[in-house]
Length: 282
Image (tube, rainbow, N blue to C red; front, side, top):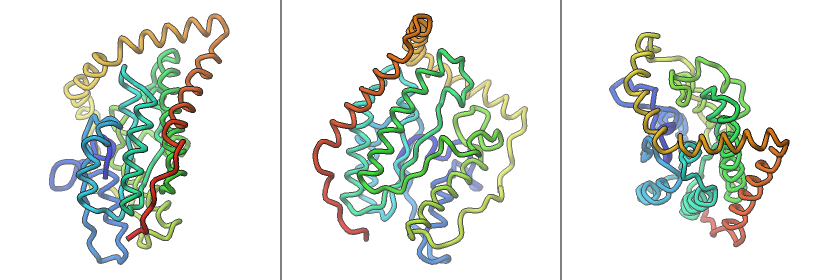
């Protein structure tokens, strides 16, 4: 499992300590036989960008010679002032292409809009929404190119369910992780890769109380916000000002067209040549 805090399992405490998350739940339900153990290796880490996955996590993942490899990343990229869809596309292409060339079945996902999830004002949410659409467009195109097992999360009804998300509104709760694991399991079953029962929706953890959630937000949550304010806030304020100027002039469509062209150029750069030769799945 490659990616960021979503795949690390943040906000889904493991019974024995640490984090569990959707990838671990899915791994336990993907064996060829119900009682056959599955080796699960999670190299994801909180805060990872698409380039971090390609530059740091990919080599470790390839050493494990996986049959299945999930690559779910890109949300953090949209929350950085240095966002560049060209770099995101290149990193994702390098990661997914290398895993497929090794013969692994790759799992990918399009992610929900972070601005909407956080409930930001429209002038702030729209620029983030365009960034997320750009990342999702790239992920969707590369998933088709490399024949990945792909799930679309942004439009699922459970994404809007409050119980599926933790207090920070960016990471799933235990229920959300279980729902995400089932989405991937359903996609794997459709490809006749997973044959067993899907991950259960029965919770085995204790949902945090309102007091515990408030305490987390007041301590660790504020640190996360402060970190994002350092690298995102100046650029986001500039994006919001640009958004307002275009809306007042009635030219907001120019921003949409600019980002559409940038996404198309990024995709053209990584898909202009033939896809790497795919080895048979082990």
